[in-house]
Amino acid sequence: MGKSDSEQTSSDRPRQLFTGGERPFDPEDLVRASGREPTPERLEQARRLIEEKGAAAVERYLP
Image 1 (cartoon, helix red, strand yellow):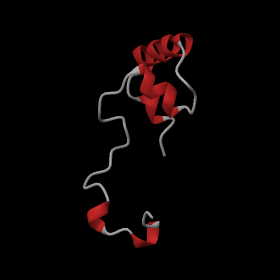
Image 2 (spheres, rainbow, N blue to C red):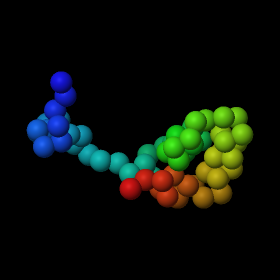
Image 3 (cartoon, helix red, strand yellow):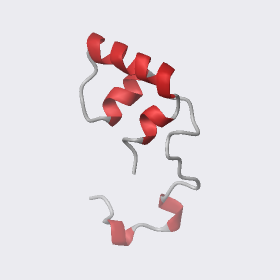
Image 4 (cartoon, one colour):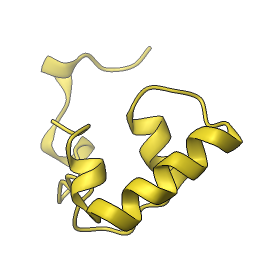
């Protein structure tokens, strides 16, 4: 069985957390971050949004 959140040690956790805006992402990443399945239409819509908004396009879906 896996460890619960309270049982995790610091070595189990990533050394650095990323919000997404500082790393490259593609239209499929944006569609999946929104909780939807990628379709050709959604991917095209995401591509246009990335061109228009840049990193802010994905940041709105991240905590």
